[in-house]
Image (cartoon, rainbow over all chains, first blue to last red; front, side, top):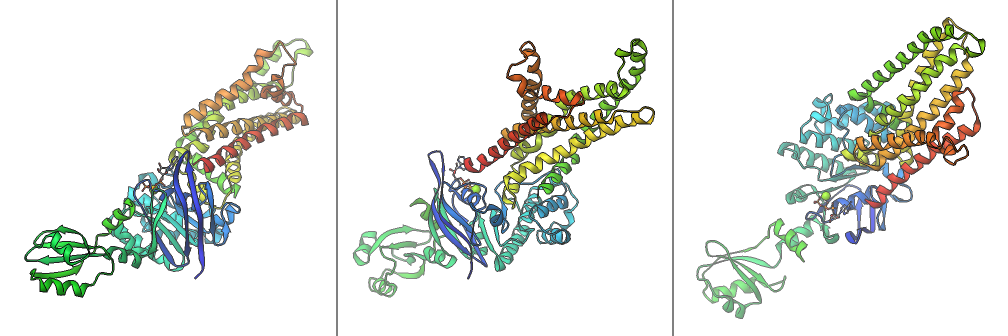
Length: 305
Length: 248
Ligand SMILES: Nc1ncnc2c1ncn2[C@@H]1O[C@H](COP(=O)(O)OP(=O)(O)OP(=O)(O)O)[C@@H](O)[C@H]1O
Ligand SMILES: [Mg+2]
């Protein structure tokens, strides 16, 4: 797989504050990378540095092998970027605005009309072509923002919270679009919607207070979610002391209807032995299943370390 | 690429009524001064009995129109330049330009030439208007050329001041006021130093250098002065925008 984007030790200071601290990662062709993180984590700041909108205090960015600080024009030609605050010239009509975007990205004159049509179609804007951008609803303005980012068919598409303000139907379409772009090109998107990451992304990166706290594939994230917890149903609830004398248990949490979440000390606890002992002790075991923490919980755990 | 940005500026100037209003007001004003000049020419000249008091029609009408152009442009250019960058700041659209494969130099030059092309059109319009005198009189085209040239350089300087102050703020009105005050000081301070002909201020005064052209003289010293003046403010604007990328 070819690497399209490489970030090496990206760091950005705002005065004394480190907004982004030593972030490194790579992105391959045909990959969708999700940026997760709480407010103020540094997602947008990282994206601004990747797109050449903000100079890093330290570190390097390579776009298709081109250093963006040394050769900004060549590097930027391969990027489509939708910033957090969508940059729209609201006094123009949709097609006029996209024409400006097309020209700025050096699309040859002959292909401009077809690129505009394709971008509008992909973003469901065709019937809004002649409307003034300032009169469009919030969601449609967001679509125009996405359309300008993909109009030149760039190698890397960077979208800062692309589904904000969209209705559920459009969210689905945009996710489909992102997946489609992700097949041939590379996409980075940031989001606050956790399930979105599992739906569209191949890889996740969780950033907190400027630091990369998790970096891996969606499967890794799911693994992380499974963890060392069991959801167990006892008819006769034993005390924590009693259980601790039998197993390496850290904590019991009572759920509704006699269900308990048991957290083991180790990840590789012996499930078979656990059941055997429970039966022998006549605890009235009626249910055992792995306890999958919600994505939200995993997220909170990772960002609270 | 500079042309693409320039054409975007011109388009965005005319998609709002603002552009058309300024254009209408300015052409109306110039037309008025022109007619005024032509009408009063005969009155004044028939009153001038000695030949030494008589001046040609080109110079007489030209002085009326170009004298006014000077002041009209002093007001008009800041109004036209104010949105160039400050509006992009206000609407947070600069990332659109910064993310495209264009350099900051091209962005600034594109914006500057977009405005300048429009101003140049007005200057040419004035030239054509005055040329119509040629229908019934033999006019001095050399005088018209040198004034046209001088006015081009002058509005270029106003535009350069305008784009610089526009890059400093996200409030277009503040940009307009600042560039007006600054240009006005450069012109108006002149009179405070009238008693000291060698004061340094006379060398930086825009008016002083423009006056050479309005007498019908094209001198390389004045051309260089204006070009330096314009480049200085363009470089300052480029540096200001570059600082955005560094400071965040
Ligand atoms: N121009 C700036 N000047 C000073 N501090 C800034 C600037 N831009 C961002 N920051 C700081 O950098 C940190 C990271 O901000 P950033 O916008 O990258 O967060 P984010 O992860 O995108 O958050 P959100 O989810 O709210 O969009 C924040 O603490 C913010 O206050
Ligand atoms: Mg953000």
